[in-house]
Image (cartoon, rainbow, N blue to C red; front, side):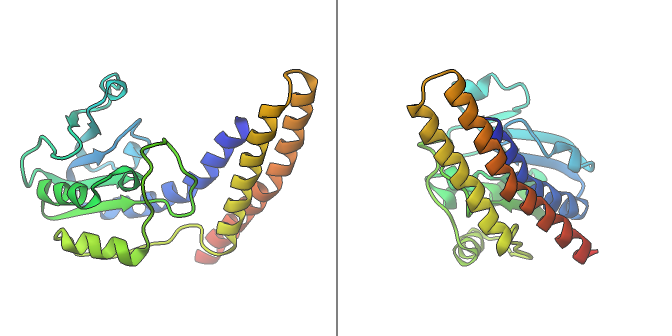
Length: 219
């Protein structure tokens, strides 16, 4: 629905902002986007030459012209020490062997290279049945260090009240979907959709206002 699309924009705007602030610190050189999809953050990494994408070998991914390399879900078909930086955004929760995925990232990363890793926490199940887990900061750090990484920084996005607002948005959307299924097509469904757009706009507007205030406080 249109509310789901707008909610997705809200959830990802903090993520894009954080990546934009971190991107200049990433070493210049070849970058691998693990689970690249549509490469939504490619423009942030101006020093990435070349910028390559990796996806699991599936039919739908084979049709994606942005993907440079395909892998079997276990081993990257890439030489060791090949990349100055790796971006792995919202992918680890889909891996049934997260240590294996992180180990492959470490193997193909040059000494002194950087891994930018993002994961969801307060996020509904998505891309079922491939959404398999969530991580605390402590569990994630232990896994990274076990694979040879030195963790420099862990950032939490949308904390506190902003997290509660995100949950309110998700609740609105899930209730909207359940009710729409029971209504016949035509004006009853249109009226309900209008009602939910108005109700959904309240936490969305509050979340955006809260984010703007946080940016002002941060300078």
